[in-house]
Length: 57
Length: 464
View 1 (spheres, one colour):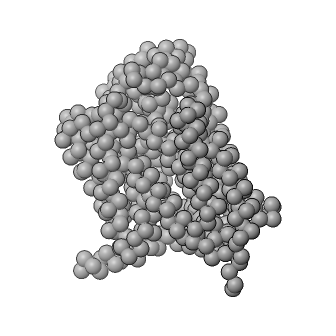
View 2 (view 1 turned 60 degrees about the horizontal axis):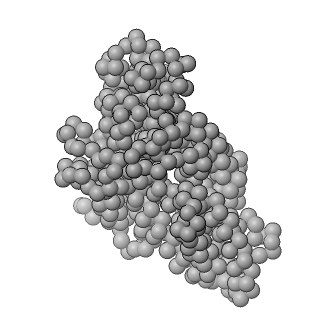
View 3 (view 1 turned 30 degrees about the horizontal axis):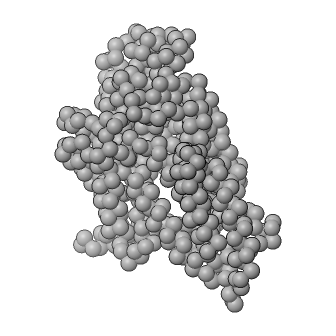
């Protein structure tokens, strides 16, 4: 289960940053990039709390 | 029922301060990993959305920015590793309890009040940063570079709503916020990077080779905005070094590094410096250039990353403001020990929110951050000398504890006279506040040694 959650989390991070690279290469519009970032944010915050360890300090 | 709930809350909050008043036991020491993550998270925060744009507004040139940030951040890491970490590992105490041993309870109390006020200003600027994003959907006019006073009723209402939410969360669940900040960090740093990458084509950068010419001519042009002073390489280097002076040279991070097994863990601060104070400062500078010089963090993040960018600003401001309000509350509580902690935190949140209404806190953030470090720095010098060098000079460490003093005049005079001399250097020699930390540390060191030589002769140990 943890592995699946991690995959979804990292997919969320990917959706946060990869579209911006495509915008830089002019292969994606700014509007699409903003949309994918919302989706990435939701995936990250919906899954990462379940597997990220608590801060120890 | 409410009383019972608050009692439980108080007990829970007290549990957070484990080992606050005693050295951290060997069994509780931590390894590298926790420090790497903690520093990376703590220094990718709301302030980063303001500092990068302010460098652009102050007309920093691209080459000065790059070299200034590299050298300044390296010096900051060295300050953590060679000044703060050795003291923290040796004493395993918080700054406040070490100060009580050296300075006595009354002087430590004065330090605590000053520290708490500084925390309130810092948290206030973060509430204002969050408010610039929260106000966006309501069409609230955002403060501009020259605004120091509240710009509209809408701005004040937005700040109070954000301040209220942050204060209530600080009262109810500080530990949840700390965890949330930890979770947010990887996403936040990627939002900074993604937002900057996405706006580069708007600035004329469509390949890697375009970046440097555009950086020099379109982003960090070397020309300050109207009414702003010109920043050089030296400003950037000293700012990057001293942005966290209160934490490293000022010894505030003893609270964290006292959990370190070895002093070398001070080098883990490099993650915070090079993610937060290099990548994030550069990224936010690019965002402001793409937004035609706008400074309001919510606006520049929304322009480049849409809703996710605005949410990032809210989270970045919130996760910085929250622990800061909590810490300020703790510091104030030493003044009002009879008050319940939730009451102190509520009071602190109210003071902080009032400060946050003034955009000057954001627009003059560079000056404030420099002042914050400078004011607390002399006590850092006092602690470093007292713990690390006095035993080698055959002088007495922890004088207040040894002689039963509640006000160590050697430390007190060192603090006040250093700040007066720094003010004199600033006013009469024209040295800007960003540079005063360096001569200030040596002034403090010489004063503390000089005064202590005479003062310690008069003090006798308290009979056991």
